[in-house]
Image (cartoon, rainbow, N blue to C red; front, side):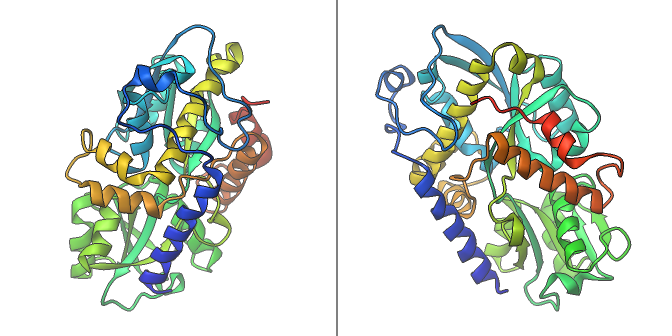
Length: 352
């Protein structure tokens, strides 16, 4: 499929989320205390009625402050999305260190965090006391081939090399699954080569690899520069409506104060809903945290994601079951792990 068609489809999927977003929240220009006093908007699907805690609650939320797909959450912190639920949230920047982030949540150094499901699942298999409460959106991952190369479909990658930044990255995990479904063994038929993110385009142009995978903004920029074209994404086939990123909360907090967890999760999903209707506002606000990006670029990337899609409760458990089942086929999750039981164990329905 042509890159234009794929990008258009991604945008349509992102726009489709508007129907799930409910009413718009007040302007991001309002101060946090002003915002908290206004009437409540329609809540994200599946989260029930608006939750405001009886007493203020301090929480630490671990995030990667530079991740474009987390722009709605970063903006939510300073603009009252948490405050109106009577939550005093401190953002803790853990970057891309998954194990450190999950350990921090499991041990209570952070109360919750947001990250990519396909990076977290293998780590959670090791027994971290972290429960997933929601999928926040879809569409962070892209697989690209050279703009002037001969790789036009997934099947063409058999016997080829793919550049990645991390052998345990969510994009490598996802596209391994997709390759497997298209008859290409990602372990034996493909060579995965490591590069720094800013050298993936160079490796592709030189022919050192025939494809590269990763997340935005790097992948988006390679397409816009004309160096690469989009071969596939994590918004195709059975994955078009699955979550990419998830909310994880320390198991202790889920067991002891589910209402607090529900309020936090609801606030995070509200912020993502807001970004569907007002990506330009989120993009502008994110500039205070973003590195080497522009409001226009962030807005375009947000349009390519499905920030109006959220999975909670049984829907989240089913999505995680799908991922775990597929990760077993590409030798990431252990053969002896039961996908259904594992998914039930690591997810929590905080809205029931």
